[in-house]
Image 1 (cartoon, helix red, strand yellow):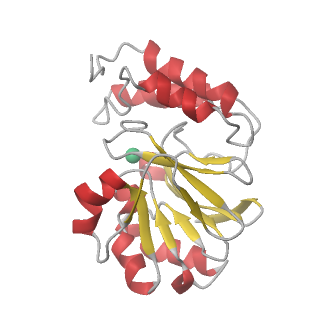
Image 2 (tube, helix red, strand yellow):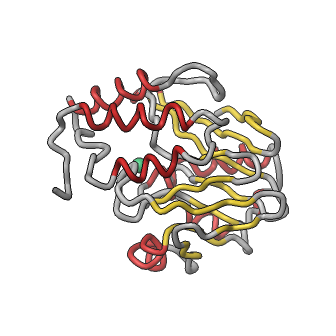
Length: 234
Ligand SMILES: [Fe+2]
């Protein structure tokens, strides 16, 4: 496990699992109302809690947000709700109504497209992104004061990658998508008739340290060019 402050008060918690050549990353934004984006799976809970404890008291986490309902995104949500009495999940309204309000110990804050969650010094705008990167309930958070997109599985790269880079990540993301097509994770990211519009929306305004306007269209192209027979909505 490693903890890196990738921007002021924004920390990446990363655990690399060599057997599957994959990192699981969570992001902690330390603020008046601290926000944890993605929890990791239940098995990672002790590790992530320990990592958070190097930065702040884990019991003071206020918001637990995530893109979609999968174990690596929110598997230990209930463990966090148990140790942090003021914590509440923040996810899409679809996610709250369809899964979280039944799965979780306490109801979630269901967010609609464009809704802003203010945590003190930071403003997180919820962007509804159905099926991007995947799952009906998917959404992302765009932190408006620093221009940071918490992009979940978009730009997914296998391997143990560095917390910060100025290099092009598209080739690595494209390779991951292609590699996954050969195994049980095939059809990982659907490309639908809505994908282009959602990705264009994510590319503007500035995000991912100001570069997503360049690399988001390239990722869309990588998703579309592979003839994966994934088109859901035509
Ligand atoms: Fe996912």
